[in-house]
Image (cartoon, rainbow over all chains, first blue to last red; front, side, top):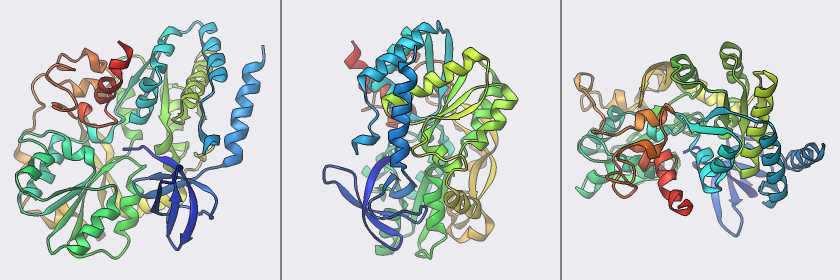
Length: 72
Length: 362
């Protein structure tokens, strides 16, 4: 039920956005609960975007872990 | 999308090596079906066991914790001629007289929808009364609340079975049926509620908690963070899923929840009543509250006694007392094609997940 998956915002018209889940799967979702721009990634749950994903954070976190784990 | 796919063999191996070096003997709990799916699908549960870490799934499956009484409410409304729309998993949970899907085969109007907006579209095209059975934790509740705040068709109403998750964590630790050393907090509930609601729990019960994402590496790191806290004797709330979860949560979503719902005491399957854990529509939204709109149809439910199916141990599974495979019905009389309890129905239920991936192991 709390399954939510990332998708990229392709276009936006008011509170409705067309998002791409990857590999060409697109769907209209409600973006009234987030502040999102075209081109950003959102997390979709039950037809609603529930948060905008932070791309920089995603890469930095992975990098940080790798460094942390390489020590000693 | 690959940048969000946390799957890197080399990093995973390093985490496992570190965990092994820590000489752990700990029991963790998570409260999310998607976490259980990641754990079992990728065989992480086996790897963790080799590191001395046992992980139990608690009450983290909204469909599973919804009570037989709530299913009966939806079924009564369907039998009374209303259109009942809800999620696929919800339709298949067996009640005393079968499931919502069984009612559909008998000719009653039950519809499977992806979300509340689909239910609205059904109402717009129909002359019948449409009831949306709304199930889910804080992840799902904002979608229901946002829709309730819009102008709705007069023939549409909501049967709210939404619940707040944190009160269940307090209830579980208060019951203290077994020792839990740390909690893997659910990434998408936390997306909405943020980190703050967990802080009181850490203080009150001195328990480490890490908000964790759902990719295999997320879970490895979340568990590593918990193990590190446990080793140091700390009890903090940390966030592994920083690419999505902010400390304050999603303020817009929290606001719509607070505007539309109020907390009340409600039973959870497998648990006694949990204080302030239910979400019911506030009085001002009475016209879209199925329980108020159809008071007559639902009359008398308070006097009925709902008992679990004989032998079904979903309650013990939901409290983390037993693993799915320890239930005597598991894989014998109870399977996804013929489920006896909700944990075998829902794709988030631990029995369903163990059944689905179990064969790959053997």
